[in-house]
Length: 313
Image (tube, helix red, strand yellow):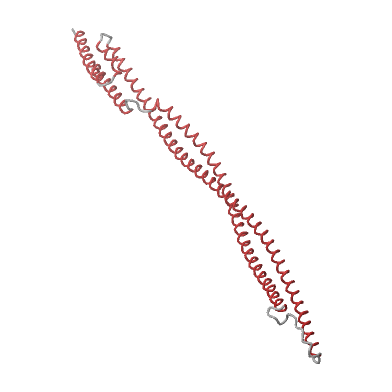
C-alpha cells in the first residue's frame, strides 16, 4: 500500500513537472522539449532527475560560454569600430591633403611656366630695344656729325665770301678817280643773296644738329628708363619663379609622404573592414538578441529548478 502511494505521488509530481515544462516549451524554451517527453513517459524516476541536473548544468555552461563570447565580441567590435572610424577619418583627411597638394602643384607649375615665358619675352624685348637704340644712336650721331661738318663748311665759306666782298669795296674806294668804274657788289646785297642764303643754310644745319641732339637725349633717356624697368621686372619674375619652384618641390615632397601615408592608412582601414566582416557571423545580433537569449535561458533554468523541486519533494 505504501509503495503504491509513493508511486502515485511520483506520478503526480511527474505530471505536475511535465505540465510546468510544457508551459515553458510553449513560451519558447525549446531545450526542455526532450525532458518534457521524458516526464510524460514511463522512464525511471531517477533517470528523469539526472536529466534535469544534466540539462541545468549544460544550460549554465552555455550561459557562461556565451557570456564570455559576448564580452569578447563587445571588446573586438568596439575596438574594431574605433579603429575603422579613426582610419576612415585619417583616410579622408589624407585624401583631402593629397588632393589639395596636387592642385597646388598644378597651379604652381602653371604660374612658373607663365613667369618663365614672361622672362623670355622681356629678354627678347630688351634685345630688340637695345638693337633699335644702337641703330638709332648711330643714325643720330651720323646726322649730328654731318650737320656739324656742314655748318662749319658754310661758316668757312661765309668768311671767305665776306672777306672777298670786303676787299672789293676797299679796292674801289682807292679808284674813285675813275668815275665810270662802279663798285662790284655781286649778289651780296640783293634780297636772298648768296651770303644771306648761306647764313640760312648754316642756321638750318645748326638747328638740325641741335634738334637731333635733343632727340638723341630723349631717346637715350627713354631707353634707360625702359631698361631699368625691364631688368627690374625680369629680376622680380625670376625671383618669384625661383620661390615657386622651391615651394613646388616642398609640396611635391609633402605630397609624396602624404600619398604613402594614405596608402598605408587605406590598407589598415581595409584590414579593419575585413576583420569586421569576419566578426559579423559570430558576433552580430541575429533575429534573437543576446539579452533575449539570456532571458530565455534563465527561464529554462528556473523551470528546471522548479521541476526539480517538484520532483524532489
